[in-house]
Length: 311
Image 1 (tube, one colour):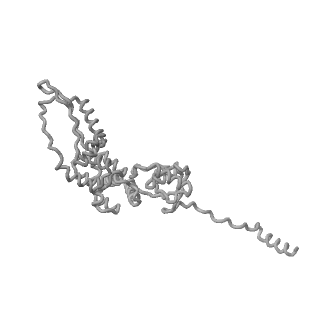
Image 2 (spheres, one colour):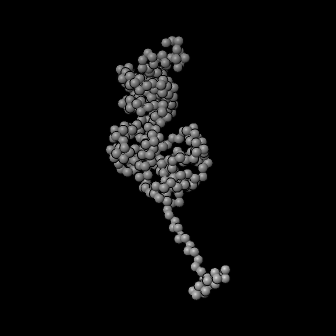
């Protein structure tokens, strides 16, 4: 034992230095996440992007997704881009909303460094690939992308992987009235119905759409209805403005409101003509004109007016 101690003692004395300490492991440099690496981002640091093409989020479906996320987590990351100290959603807003509903503090995300136009394009393409958009959301997405990036229909079609005719037909839907667009978004009217309605004069579209919804008409039935529209429409009488006194603006607005409400309820064109005083002092009676397309339509209207026993 002494020999062992002595053997080590002189060696340390000879060097005049304390025994060497084990080398410390090299410091690890902070490595930023790779471009395609999924990272977790605080939900409160995420804000929706202004370009999101999806506008409608069904409450029931969102709650179902939230319940699934609460049990299994978010299975697919959302797409984000960093803006200041916040993160802006590019795609995955439905997952983000459901995660908020589920009470998650963090959500998996992929970060992208893209411009506003690129973010808009990515959001539209991601939603189109998932078939998540309704007809009007899709059309508005094409329009917004064309306006933001000054693109033609053909260029938009190429970027989103669609035929040019598909983009052109979708954009035509934006010419329809708000009521018809709402029905398309809700699914009570189909793209086929919309195509037929676009071939009809604008004043008749809402009336035909109301009838389609009220009776659950197929696209083929609507086509037959439109084909017979011109043949059955009565000739419009020309009136001489000098022979009647115009109704007041307030009365005209009230009559239009009533006519619109009756058209919605009956699913056909309704015209209200006000009672008026003729130049000779006599009074002309007001009129309610309810149009119908055929005998079947007449029977339907009589039933709605509780006069079905007359059919």
